[in-house]
Structure formats: structure tokens, C-alpha cells
Image (cartoon, rainbow, N blue to C red; front, side, top):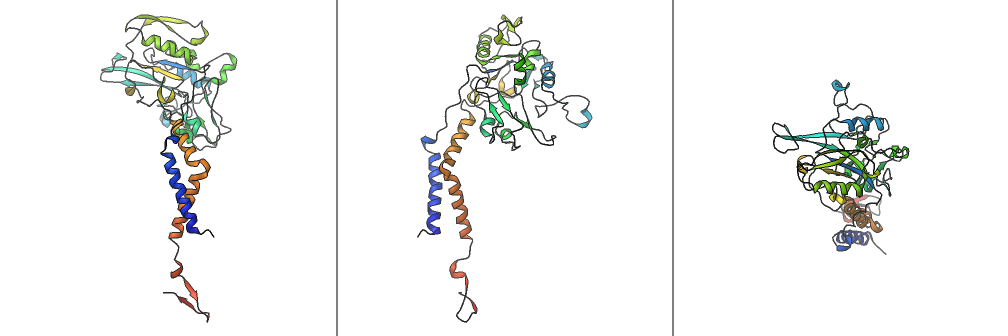
Length: 336
């Protein structure tokens, strides 16, 4: 007959097998998710941004968001320092020294847009246990369903960009994040931040078209006169204005980072100075999902954990030799 000791041996052996499986080649991360050919997104060009914050106001209006302030003394003015559950889009500023030269790292300043990047392989979607966070298979928009949300905040912890925010002021609790104004698209509109941007610093369109435009700009010589489109790049009839190209950092942020993002950025100031540290090409979601599937496949990890708990419980129980017993006369004796 199988004994508890045999069970513990098998359980601990299962745990060792799980640990070994995690270290074998078969447990390597899956490939990154692939971008839909019809995916839409944004291209933000910091060199064109004038810091007017029209995009912030338009986002508030389009999503019916309330005033967001830092302290009770600021309650008469909307002035969020970062994205929150009630502010989906903000413009931050980099400053150095005298901060008098636009798009210069020394004694200069530069603006930077902060909002959801709509990752091609989003960690928030991977972490959500109830599909409250989903990614549209066609547009690629990462959206949120408050009715499905259970308030676990796994998405908040999982996002490498710190975008989903939990609304602690809500009676029921909810997550707030940019959804690329998907609710406006049925009426022929698109992201409000791009619609109102006066310089085209925020540009909407298909990701493929936006990448082509970004590559065109990166190929320009500093000071070269060119046309900068505004609004929706993919309609073919968008307005544009003539200006001089800046000296761009030769990199399109979001092209490869963590498997790519659908909001991409150009800058003349190094990205690590405007809030974006270097990131690997492999998505975090592909790594975490592979680890989860390896550890939980066939319930191996739960069985190993149960075995370990049983082992420690057994170890802390008094041994049979130390237990008291009753003699023939009914008197209890200690075996010691």
C-alpha cells in the first residue's frame, strides 16, 4: 500500500521535474505576436510638438473625463502630472541647463507624449484572467471592458510602461487607459489627440503607413525642407505644412521594443532622457506565458506545492514514538 512517504517522494520528484522542464530548450519563450496588416496607431514626433496640450484637452472631451488635479488647492485647474485612470494622455517635458534650445540635450528642452502604446504583444492582455483587457485582431487596439473587470490590477503590474491605472476614487473600481478613441471610429472619426494636433506631432493612420513616414523623416538631412502631414495619414487627402527637418535620433521607438508597439515615437533627444529606457525585442508576454504553461502544465506545480506543504506539516507533527498511549489498566503512560 502506498504510504504518505511514497506520496511525498513522488510530489517532490514532480517539483524537480517541473524545475528541470523550465530550464530545458522546450521551455523557451514563444515567438512574439504578429502585427495585423490593418492595425492602426499613432506616430508622435517630438520635434514637431509645441507643448500646447490641445491633445490632452481633446482626449478629455472625447472620453468624457473629469478634471484631474494633484491637491485640493489645485481643484480649479486640470493639471495631472502623469496618466491616471482619469487622464489617458499627457505631454511631459525634458529640460537641461538653461532649457532655451528646442530639441537640444544641452541647455535645451523637448516634449514627450505619454499614453498607451498599444503593444503588438501586450503584457496587460496576457496577464488579465477574465479578458477585461483584449486586443482587437484587426485594428490591434488594446481595449478595456469595465463590466468584465474584477479589479485584480494584474494589468497594472504587468505593463512595462506603467499605463493602465486603477481608479481608487471610483465606488466600484475601474481601470483607465487610452483605447485610441475606438468608440468614435464608427462615426468616421479617429484618435482625438491626432485630430486636433496643429502641427501633426501626433499623427494617426495604419501602422505600416506610419512606419514608412517615420523612415522617410529619419532619412532627411537636418534642416532639409519637407512636408509634414497632419491628422489621418492613411486617408490620402490629409492637410500638411512645410517645415525643416530636425536632427533626429536615428531610431523609431516602438518599431521593435518588446515585439513592437502601435504608437511609435521620433525624437531629437536621446530616448533614455525623455523617459524611455532601452528594452529588448522579445515581448514580456511571450516569456511569462511560456513559463506559466510550463509550470502549470498537467498541474505539476500545484501537486509539487501540495507535496511540499504536506512534507512540512508532517515534519512538525509529533513522532509515533513520542506519543502517549494507554496501558491495559486504562492508565495513560508516556512511552519515554
